[in-house]
Image (tube, rainbow, N blue to C red):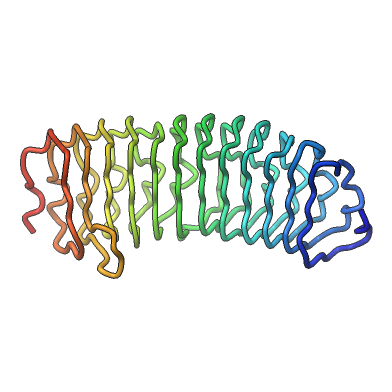
Length: 287
């Protein structure tokens, strides 16, 4: 590989099948795009001096660890997808900032691991990670982030690393084993959409007791949820600049009352309430 001694590479660097020895990359500090794929690479130790990546993709690899990327401080986007033996992201412990961290279909990953330097992720997307039970540790995470999507992670229960967040643009939690919103107990505002969908074990929203504004609230098919206790501080719903319903409740089979919404004085877009057999009245929406 003709990159020995190179510290800056302003192009796409693909490390795929047939590439096993990365020693010639030991001086590399900055690369525009780095793609690591295939079964040949089993260690990233030679990348120990890498500090900046515009886009990092680790996909369909044989890696069990990302150690070797410990020196990485900034990545524009990070995609860690379909690595069957990868157990966590602890090798990214030095990462401070990224605009997007996407984790998808890593069959052995039970946790994101220790992301001890991460302050800002912009968007965090965790998809289809069947073994994922928790999000690891992010002790330096800033209170303002943009988008969090946790989708189709059936074993996911613990969201504690996100407890420091207070302000989000959008939050989606779908098809998990989350029982409460304790991982978001610091949250005060969701500017666009709060979407809780098909979380069959979700029974408690009380940790959302600091939230005063939600752009659009979607609660769909959370069949164990009996009340909205915890949303009593909410005063405003809906954003007319979007097409999202200000209030959408659909198919929450056990939800029996809306009384926690009694302080809501402004719903600035559409309301939809449907397929909720336990709901007897609309008390709580008088204002």
